[in-house]
Length: 352
Image (cartoon, rainbow, N blue to C red; front, side):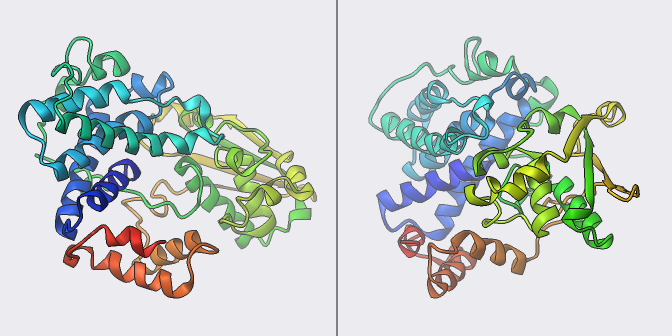
């Protein structure tokens, strides 16, 4: 839920100029909470029928962030929700392609555009968000009365259940399984040449979206358990270097992926989709087997968060080859002190 409202708040702050760090963060968190509450209130049909929430609901979160900074109220605010509801788009079949990350970029663009149009008096149906033909009814099949009764602003998703920060640059659904694979090969001192087969047992909540049996490039690898686990088997890490076209297309990676199997596990499926559950069995060429269950308290999640230093390390890994070390240091310092900034738009200037 982070990228659309965060990007929206940043570009709107740049456009307006002299937006304080406190107002910038308030706008971001407003968009974040609007986005999360919509996702929590809507029925699961929205995602299960193939919509990509980061693109669809993200558009409305991005709108709310921009609307906060632009000071929209009354009819303007309602019109903007209607405009954003018509702009909201993104389908999950594009996972593993260039279009998937485009969803969040367009969500930001469309949300900001909706706010700018509404500010200028551009109209929309005030019920386009939650009316009979509105966003929640058309794209989500309605909402949960129990969830709606909580009201807005009574609970804060950023606090409970909290937000995840990904240790790996791929779909979060793969992360517990990646950590388990790393644990098994490290503790068992398993070398790549020792592996005969690796079988991953999981539920459909993981296996359907993480859908590439053999990744051919880095985009497909982000949605491929065989690819991510092959990186661990070969390099004992899955970072920016491993998630590159050259590494993924290498002979070693293509061979290792063919030793990986995924299987729908009825026992895991029956436990529901509230957790990311999986288990791995590694069969070695000498006939031995090493197996284990993934930790449901996955690393980087609210129950097992990254430390501040780990977050900084992740930031630096993303900036490698883009920003020099002194630029990284300056941006990290600004980020930690964002509430004291007099012009939050400088965050973008620092990353040039």
